[in-house]
Image 1 (cartoon, helix red, strand yellow):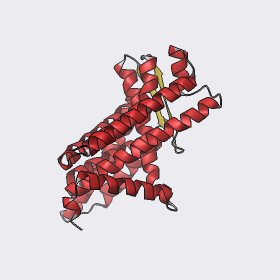
Image 2 (image 1 turned 135 degrees about the horizontal axis):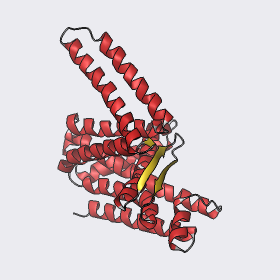
Image 3 (image 1 turned 90 degrees about the vertical axis):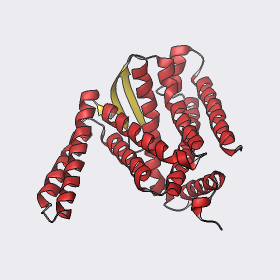
Image 4 (image 1 turned 180 degrees about the vertical axis):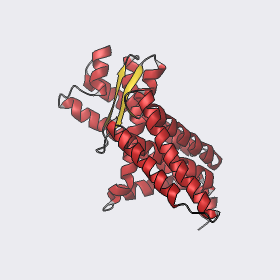
Length: 281
């Protein structure tokens, strides 16, 4: 069998899908995919937040919960677009990653762009209290990591790094406490962790690993987006009125079930289109 470095994009996609399927069904595989499920929630809420700001609104709270649920509290914004941007946004993100996986040379800029966008959303939105609180938490995380990195450099030069490690750890602890107090701990950890990981892979991994990473993310985010819509259909059928479909129905009309199935059909079309564009010569 040829080296993975010479595999065609279709082969890499099959491998990516096999990795995702294996992790979904093997015992304890959920532990490996759990961060990606949180990341899908992060993308979903980012869709709401970006749509809110883009249509003149203000985001007051951006929360991701450990159980993979989340919410955005806002004032203003165009409700039909904001309500649709969560579910459709995550599906579009997955489809975009699948499309970017068509060519290996696109993988590196895709990962760098994804990482930068994730860190930006984290810095601007994560937590409650608005942008100032979110930026403060992000600055504390950045300062703590920067101090630890500087300490590592000092150690490489033969100088003691103990004081830098202690001070950096203290700043990171302050960042964790502060982001927990404003309700943005999970969102901050997911955003910084996944954003930094995407940039790291984009800068230092082999081209094959970069390509495989883009396609694994594309497959997983697409599947999670579709699964979220299945969950939405279930909760609308049970009469829950605190969800995006209910908000859409209140703003535009029709029933929550109508919007849940409409978004589901649109999402299937988007994902199918992405796979078709990927697979065609």
